[in-house]
Amino acid sequence: MNKKGLLVVVSAPAGCGKDTILKYAFGVCSNLHYSVSATTRQPRPDEEEGIHYFFKTREEFKQLIEADELLEYTEYAGNYYGTPRDFIPKLLDEGKDIVLKIEIEGAANIRRLFPDCVLVFILPPSFAELENRLQKRGTETEETIRRRVDIAKVEMFSIKNYDYVIINEKLENAVEDFAAIIQAEKLSIKRGIPVIE
Amino acid sequence: MNKKGLLVVVSAPAGCGKDTILKYAFGVCSNLHYSVSATTRQPRPDEEEGIHYFFKTREEFKQLIEADELLEYTEYAGNYYGTPRDFIPKLLDEGKDIVLKIEIEGAANIRRLFPDCVLVFILPPSFAELENRLQKRGTETEETIRRRVDIAKVEMFSIKNYDYVIINEKLENAVEDFAAIIQAEKLSIKRGIPVIE
Image (tube, rainbow over all chains, first blue to last red; front, side):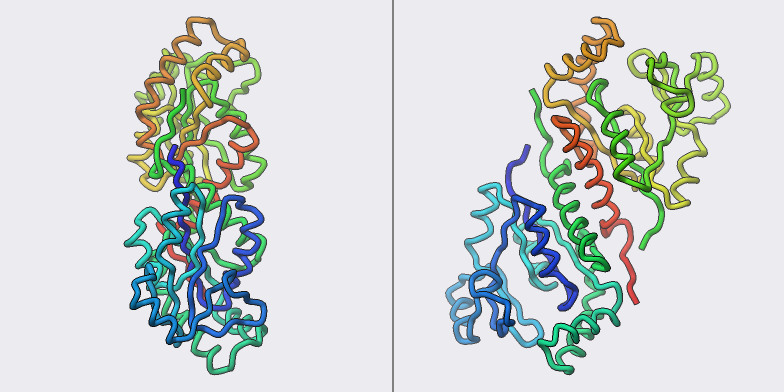
């Protein structure tokens, strides 16, 4: 059996509950580890440096790009997001499963670099509900919220490039869906035929 | 979202615990239904007509073949096994998930008829353990057991044509694996892109 870890890439429009789903998924999937991204986005109140993101100034981020220290990076809603280069292959070889939170363009880049990765897209039950959730979060202006909902509508067209879609109607079910995807992928024949004695 | 049911084909060498796994899987997967096969094999003490199999004489089975009432059939370990024609498409259209217990050649036939089906192979932890389980079952002669283990070894070569492999080391985990496969397959983008408002 192939003992290499699984690389799971998760994309979702902002406000779809991606972070909450993953938080609970770590309680269910014992072998799961985060790949921490670098970003120029402002930290939200509950976000910690090195845990949720490596928070960088635009100047610092550009230095990472120039030094070729990022596996991929992209600009999204006015901010840079990128994946540190050395982190992923090392953890996969150790047999650890890794989750990468990443937007659509970045996900496509990761797929090219790691063809075996699993791409998961998370959707809200509706766009009205998405707007509602973003407003409740209260961390963004009305204009940013409208912009994010518009971006989400465009992102729908990219779903076809993903492997799985989870609709986050009920958190508990979405977490279960996520765990099932990881469990099933590990049983998939395309990841290696098991040998028994 | 595609509301059509999922067709899951399960193959396993005799003694791998296929029936027990499925029995418990029906408790977890609420939408799951059996497709009942016809066979010329002798019923085991706990097996009921119309629930586990439609038990037929060789003569009756040949009549089903001639009347084209079987979707597929095959001879395996000296007995005929076949799938009644009308059962599956009807249930799938109703949105029900169906499990078909079927040997390797039959599974390949079903794949040709239903390309969207999911093929699951169940393995014992080892061949020694398989022999052990068959002996414990006490329903077959030593010669039949040796024959079944030999067949199992040959069947290993066909695993590559399946989508998933479950190793039945611990029943509880195998049932969970089976349920995860069904749950994940329903989230797979290849079964239709969900549309949200």
